[in-house]
Length: 140
Image 1 (cartoon, rainbow, N blue to C red):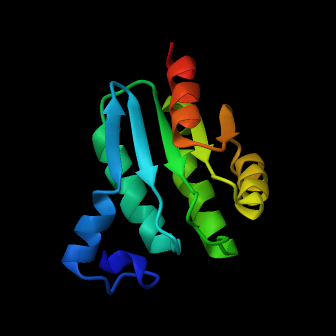
Image 2: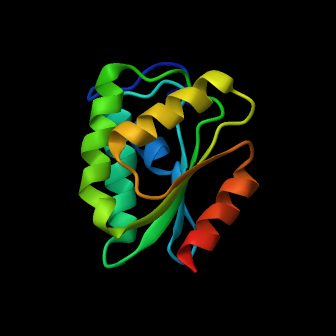
């Protein structure tokens, strides 16, 4: 995919924006998935969260899984945009489960970011399957 090659911004093509939007999917009723891009930018976060908000419109409660297993460490601008975007959905957010694979650096950054963002219910997992199960339990 072309979106893997470089950080995206407001000058991205419509095809790239569509590829980003396709990285947010519905796994089950009230359970969604973010397949995060390797190089996150405020723009990519906005596109992904805009799509999540579209997909969750009308839901009083939902959870999502984030695949961070292939990402690079986010910069301060990305972390700040994440805080802003999570604030918008926090009242309806039942749980966020992050899959980091074996990436110890991203595991540590995810813990710090989760604390800074103020997630009420958050877990970190080695695999996507574990992350999905954590969200299922939180939605019960």
